[in-house]
Image 1 (cartoon, rainbow, N blue to C red):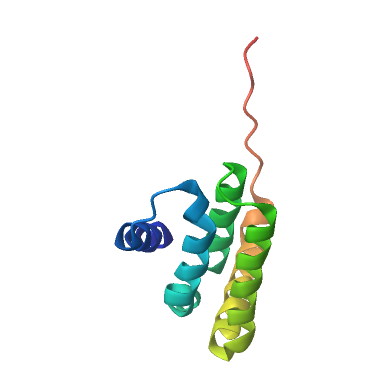
Image 2: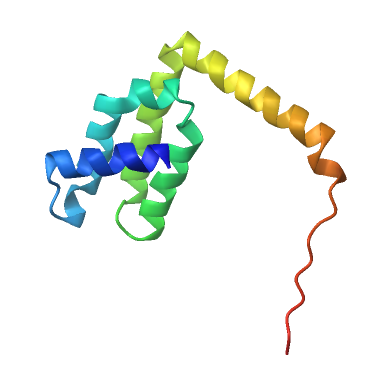
Length: 112
């Protein structure tokens, strides 16, 4: 939700008018908000958003790759962001080991 608020404000502020401007919007978004994105631990959310844009044909594979590489470089340059990512991953693993792996899967039956 937080990422989408940031993204929508960015798109409205710079008035992108066509699908052909989406790759530029993604790169400018990272230039403007990349540090904030990493500080708020929204790395995975942004990556998922980029994949969704690709799935809907708004972002080419090359543009997707370049944008994710740009984000990875920002992550590599920030020790604080890397530490936050490590802590997040550790917390997810601990939660999975404590709770998640013991939950029974939900099976949804389909009616003929």
